[in-house]
Image 1 (cartoon, helix red, strand yellow):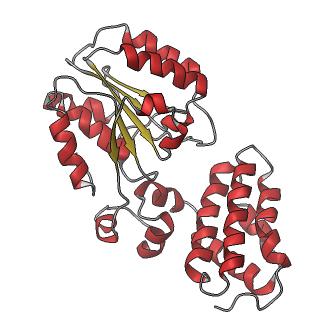
Image 2 (tube, rainbow, N blue to C red):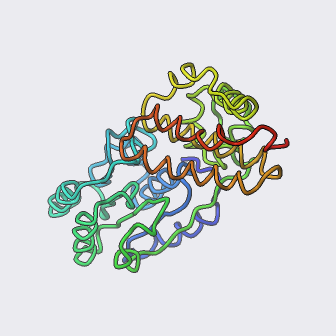
Image 3 (tube, rainbow, N blue to C red):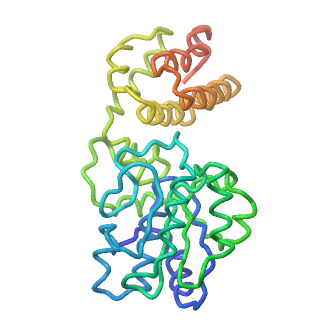
Length: 300
C-alpha cells in the first residue's frame, strides 16, 4: 500500500505497532490528506500479508469502521458523506455489541472512527466508557480534522498523531486525471488530495470566472448557470473553498479589511447552510457584502 507524504508519521506508527498494548490513537489534520488510508495501512502492520487485501477492501471482519453513509473500497470516506451530519449514539451502541465478540482472524481488532468530532455528545460519552474498559486486543483509531470538538477526557486517553498537508511535489506524485490545472487545484485544496478529488468534479474555472464577474461588475451574472452546479450542501461547501481561495490569493493586498469581512461572511454563511438553509439564498447572501461595496474598492 502506497502512502504519499507524512513519512515521519509512518515511521512512528511502525514503532507503535510493535507495542503489546496500544492506546487509542488520534489522527488529526486537514481533511483528505491520507489519515484514513494511513489508518488502514496501520491495520495491515499487525496482520499477515494475505489479509491485506481484505483490510483495504474494508471486508476484514476484525477492522470495524464507524462513519456516516456507505463505505467504499480503498478508502473509507463514504461516497455520500455529508460532514454536516452527526454520528449518532446508535453507531456506538452497535460498536459495543460487536466488541463483545472475539476477533475472527486477527490477534488484534481495530476500530476506526471517521470524523470523530462529528460524534454527538451522547455518542462521545458512550465511546469514553468503551475506551475506559477496552481490552488490549482492540486498538482504536480516531480520525478528525478538528479534535477540539472531542471531549478532553477522550483526548487525554489517546496518542495524538498530527498529519501535515502535502507539498506540491508530493501532491504531484499522486496519479489522477485532473480536469483542471494541477497547481490551481493543489492551491485551492491546500494540498489535500481528498478535497482536490472532490473539487475535480466541479466546474472550478466557471466558478472563478463567476466570482471575478461579481467583483468587477457588482452583479450576479450567469447566476443560474453557477447555481445549477451547486445543488446541495457539499456542493456549496466546495464552492466556498474556491471563493476563499480567490479572495485570499488574488486580492488580499488590495483591501485587507474588506477581504477579512468577506472571509468572515463566508464562515457565517457556511454555518447557516449547514443548518439546511436554502443553498440559493446562501449563495446570494455570500455575495451580499461584495455587491454593496462601491466600484473600485479592490485594485488588483
